[in-house]
Image 1 (tube, rainbow, N blue to C red):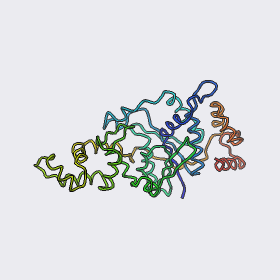
Image 2: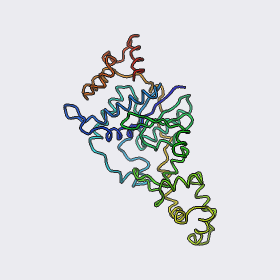
Image 3: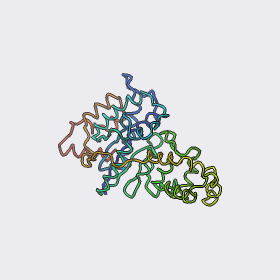
Length: 330
């Protein structure tokens, strides 16, 4: 089976910015820690997966449908330093030189773009690897989707399939949506149910399977027309949910389901993924060499050696052989 890597680019960008020294810059004073870190991540991805196809998904600056649904979405997130954002054009330039197509759709996040690629790849005999540093994408795991989690400054990766996820977290992929619905997500300012943390949320999911079944079970036991608060003690004992937790759930049902909508990755973003256009190996040697020289990535220039000394888009048999060798050496 052929393999496709889809990169959760913004997650990698943020990891690179915080993992590598802030004083990493070229002689002109241009900061390069994000671009260099992203290059290391890309090389590690290529080493570990050796994909047939590769593409990158990005967020855009414009608000998304989640901001329309919940105006406070990500409102409390501390804005990243401008030095991070200033390097994103260089990251995109590097991806272009590597021949990695970029996908970004206004009104949606990179996760939604990735989810849509996963959905569209159901029609193809392809194993999809999502390269990320963010647990949000775990919900997309299935028999032909794995998550390549980048760790420790991009020197290590951990591959999650369904069984490994279950072994580590004792949760199914779709449970990560309900986990956020109940416990919230401080980084994205998804409220969840105030007072319920990840452990309690996990216990509820393991007992009731889904958010919908949890609330169905609660509401089935509460008699209409009678005071809800007066019934909590009895319902608490019957369902084996602490009374305090039960009241929090009853009082915050609307917010819990809104949080679930915010946490759910969309799979219907209006674009068509071009699988053949994502074929790995169509890199531009001249662009790559020029970019690495401008950014003063001497170690990467040494690593690639003469493979980026040739003409752009080489067509000779010898050059094609070099292409294949580069793919293997990465």
